[in-house]
Length: 89
Image (cartoon, rainbow, N blue to C red; front, side, top):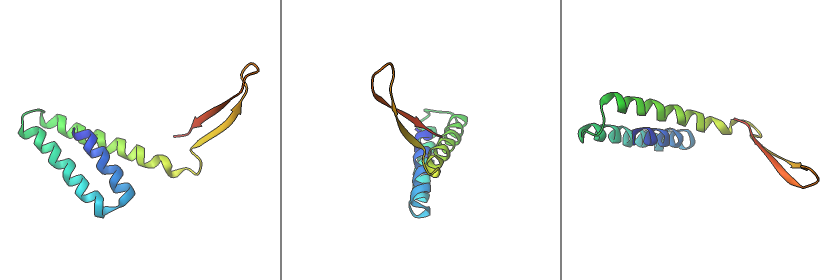
């Protein structure tokens, strides 16, 4: 729960700025503490989830910084026809 809410909060912060990102991180922090309060996880689990989610959000948010991260080209395998796609990340 904590990692997914921190990942979401990071993406929201990147795309919408502080106005929406700050409340998103506040909600993510609340989710982490709620897991502790209900004895569902240890503190180390929640911290690791927050770090993991934040790292994932940095990687997801930085993907669209290239001009062309997806390319499509015609492909002809053994006389057939198709398209080849590549994703740069």
